[in-house]
Picture 1: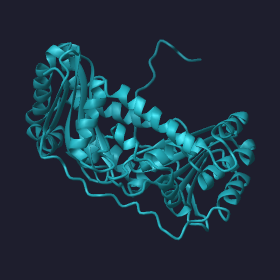
Picture 2: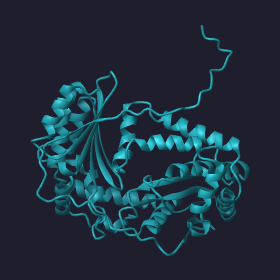
Picture 3: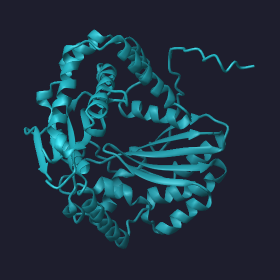
Picture 4: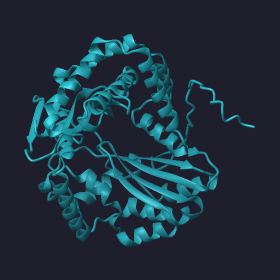
Length: 425
């Protein structure tokens, strides 16, 4: 019988066990990775496509084509697609990212013979009806108008444009950009991008042989690549020479602050250690930025820092919204916390807490087979192996305060931070 008066033993996390996929390549060139786990008859299938090369003259093609995939084919309207998926208790979504765009299906395995043909129709025969396109443009322009009233949205757009310039990472569309969308361009873009040679297919869940056979039979011979290969190269990033941006809004009660600098990505050997450094600074609720600017000073409800990792580098960023009268004071305190990491050793107790938080978060993020597939995607599209997570856990457990001090001086130059303020300053 459990003695509830005695706390359970504390055990450090020794290692992280990750499910590894089986791999096969279809004859049409599509790579398939299979994560077979669980006893429920449910699967998640993701069709992942690299975005085509960014065209500044037509900046919204990647996003618009992905978003409108479910708006109709020659045989199914948007409502018919939704009805067919809903009838079988499935869920279908499309998601656009800077580097890849996804089509995701959650379905009971017993209904895959009904739901997979719908996805195949979308991926091979989407037509982007003119009426739907006009509705899409109108809705997006209205959403943009509303979003641009939000200080944090304006700050994020300004920051991304400064760091990434006129590339897919720095895309900050305005209302006129939506007017450049033409159905003919979208059909050509769709044909070049959504082909099996540019697709990675990841299936996770209870995946038995008949499921794989059905998937292969639906998406192999009947889905062919075009003779024109997808151009997935991207323009080089050119950072702005200007490092300070102020968008004045004198009537606001809160000012949005976003600051940071170009940074290393997941492929760099220092990445796990600087993630520890970032967590100390602002990567969790007990971070230094939170303790100082929220808990001690009361300037904000929340503040945090993070590291984004892209194929072409990344960024370290700090984000908050503060009372408009405290904007300058908040920036001074942020600089103090950054400089403190460069001048003082992190105490053992604080570093131990951060280690446990990071390892616990990693372990907690592996709650099901879908989570394991997500971790694999991070590695696969960064062209890295599973040894990354072994190295990550080892670095988190063993990096010293002295090493973090050296890294802080190497990477955190506050004078080089891009600083964006929207509101009062």
